[in-house]
Structure formats: C-alpha cells, structure tokens
Length: 60
Image (cartoon, rainbow, N blue to C red):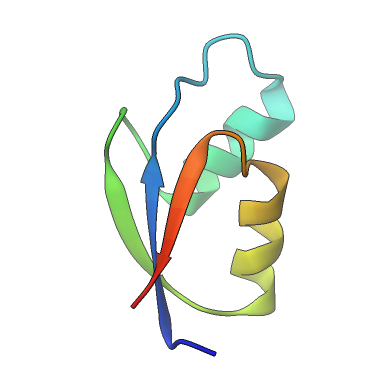
C-alpha cells in the first residue's frame, strides 16, 4: 500500500448533497482541479469512497 494519496477534485460539488460537500471540505479540497496529498489511512480511504464520483485518486 502506498504511503500517500494525491486527491484531485475533478467534478463540481454543485448539486451534491451537504454530506458530500462536507467530505470534500474535510479532505481540504476547495476548487475544481485543486489537489491535496494526504496519508494513506483507512479514514482517508473511507472519505474518498464517499465521493469517488467527484475526485480522482493517485497513489504516490
């Protein structure tokens, strides 16, 4: 398993429900095509699983 994940917001949060918007905010994503690098933990993987249709994930 990789040590870090690069998570990029690829689709807009317009039209998504408030819980999904909260997950995007908690991941640290702000705008379209904004990327963050986070540790590969079960909590991060779970958050990404909630919004897989909005983000792209790369293992570093």
